[in-house]
Image: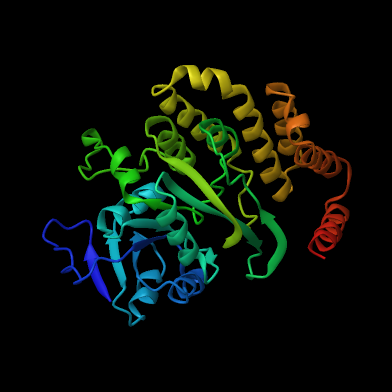
Length: 347
């Protein structure tokens, strides 16, 4: 295993391998120890073997770096840096990467063994596709499958789909062509950091959706997905709604950033995109049992664009129903009802 310190001007990057890998897997780490082995093991178990793993210790206070150091695999590289947030950790990983394709995996998620094989084939055979992503299977905090899935639109994806519905879904789903990242990189010298940025490091939330929309509006690269659930996405109820106002503010700023690229596009689709964002936050509030926030957010969603009832009646209606029940039922009764419904759906 190799080691590199991003913070030190005297540190030298490790000597390159004789052959550049096809895929670079970037794993940001902050308080990552609990699930980190499961995460890394899911990459090492891939049926496609031509990859490197770049694990970024983003100033983590736990022992995630020691966990990475315990592996004896030349494809695994540890990079340490002062804390810069998820965007900063991903940017460091991209700069350190050498693959034709760059894949992102959050440290509390994991992959299906065929994840990389399927995405490499997808990108190799579809030269116009710059961002390949997959459906995701939800798991609980103990890594038990919930029987629920994130099933995004995967074909004929347009910029308005990226803006309104974020079909990429989560940060562990995409595999991106390097040329796409090269096309959107920028330097923000006033921040005191002179390396290229791909994800905007001024964001601590919504950095992914800002990046995806920037790709869609500023390049000709296409987004396309795989229907198979190749990503295991962990559902964690801690703090989901406590910061919904901050998350909404970050989303608003991401919209403002991309309005500079195409104002007419944003004006045309903003109300619908905002409705979907409110609905998404309402679901998060339901997950964390914040009845007041859930009710307020679903009202905002319908006020922003009531057409989401027609466009996606099932999901919108379910979110409305959950918000109403959460406000009128005792928490224990709601928990029992939700558990029964989840078990029924899983069955």
